[in-house]
Image (cartoon, rainbow, N blue to C red; front, side, top):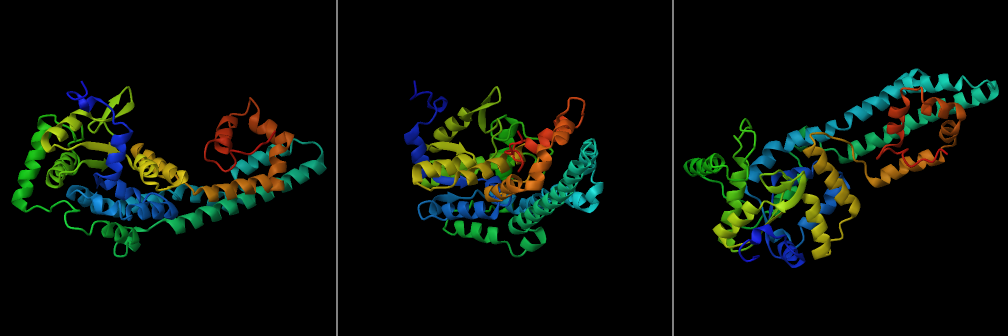
Length: 376
């Protein structure tokens, strides 16, 4: 049965190894743009892997993917810079308001319920000092990471160190999809539209109001089949587009590349096709090419991918920065004293306080530097 219905069977370890070690590796625009959404350190570790002698010559950039990369490059960089704005504004507001900060005012009001005036004064002083130091520390950390990891659009319009590195990945003949003449391009696009009209994936279900009318995905697909025919090699597509026109999705679970695509690719080219997202690709490099990409890097790439797919953005600080913040919380005596005070605990965790749940989520939710703090 596997010989006849092979597209419905998952690749085994040997097949996965073949794709990572031997196949041509086609990179989608979202993978290249993802380099603008992660920290400088993680970006460098990924580029070093792509530049390896056993990887770089096998890379392929579909023309349409390259076009989309250049079209979106500045806007993605701008969006990445904006993700720090809200956190910076909140911290700046806390610093600017000082004792008038709402959270500190609420905490001070709770502390004033302590009848022992000596204890009350010490707790008020501890709260004031801790909040000021915390705001200053967090503000400094965010600003430092922002300046270190953000590439501003005006800066990279003419001098883009990421684009310079990407450009050097595709220097060999045939590594970039062919730029077509106007007449040839119209025929090529008509073919893509015909696929969409016939409900042939990929690209089906795409919003036709998109700038390209939804033909981008079928154009990339057609380029990859052309590549496989020309070089007579399997193709590994690395793309963070994991929607149902590329993937077999059942009950919101991803079961791998769409069988229809696997079958068409094999029938039309005589070669095999596989598709992984960027973080899975890095994991496979570790498994099959001893790449030794840190798990922190893979997690950061995954978080950035999920943030984009969820149409949201959040700051993903490097682990060493998070650890410095955690260490500050653990060792700051004034902050620790405030959190351990009975008045603070009664106020912030009392059943009658409507702010208690939101505060707990803020202070001890995943990713918060105070989340590992033991206040028992």
